[in-house]
Length: 325
Ligand code: PEP
Ligand code: MG
Image 1 (spheres, protein in one colour):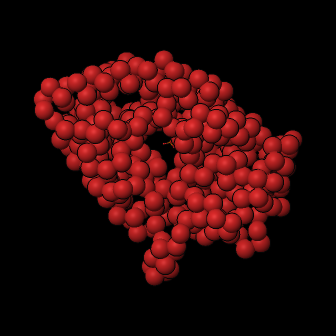
Image 2: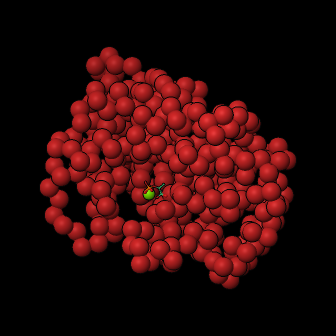
Image 3: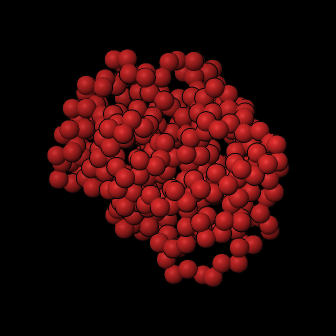
């Protein structure tokens, strides 16, 4: 089995008709970087940084954060590493923030909203990530963005941290990129506006599905309703992909659905050719990608876009998938 993982890792990540596909890994911990590499990841599409704060008594200092970011950047030298700013709130809040209980945490004080309200907590993270830009192709990802104002405010905070590093004579790479997660219908519908301020998009379907369908992603009773193939979701993927191409910026999908053969087929059919998934899923996903022809994926996506419900979307996709998948 190990030998097969390594054989597949060596294969090119390209469709049967020659379209290169970036297959990156989602990381929850820096120690996973080695496994991601062994499983053939061509970069880290989503480095979730919450491990640094959840279950802790205080905010980790700059050196500890810097070491974590540098370690992953160095493990993937030459490949893109997308580091996401703390996505606190929802179901993840460190005890030391002493947060009052929220009635609807997923509709509450979460992610970029916390970041902008508590800049002092986040400056350390921004500074640590900036320092890590020297060690690889580091890209900064802002979670749960709703509008351009939030992106501009994060950029302004980053610029202030850049000034601070310059003053202190500490190196960073000015060429880093700043992009946004597309995880709310607001962001998907306003993607054209966001594209003027963001260097790239990463579509987080786990949240996009939750917020589009008003289905709590953690509620087991609703698991059946949590369907990434709902036509409303497919239409948003389609529209965000077109906006990104028109603006000349990269778009990737980093939600769980990208790891399924139907999901990957849909993404490719919508011309989203960068996917990021949990690293254990990478070898299977690469085999699927290598069996797909873009022409078939595009035709299936066109049929999926005309479907009336999630079942029809899935049928339209399944019909077009090659038998080998
Ligand atoms: C997502 O929402 O799809 C995503 C990748 O982010 P997370 O699962 O960490 O919320
Ligand atoms: Mg998310």
